Length: 99
Image: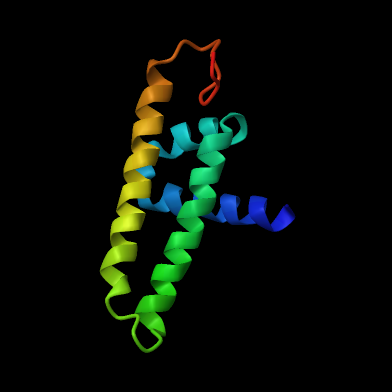
């Protein structure tokens, strides 16, 4: 589990660099929103794979670059939507809770 949380934390830092206007919101969501933490981990995995595909593609992987770019954009969009939704919630509710 330690490596999972480390990947999620790396994803958070990457998102903070990619979405600088959302840094404060990302910091708030991080400790209290488990689905957001999972998004951060997925973002780290996707960006690592994209970087490898660009720098050291294996035979047959050239077409995957555009696919992983789209995955990264989709994850960024999901994070932006989660930030907007969290802003609209009353302070007493925890983002990602089912209440």
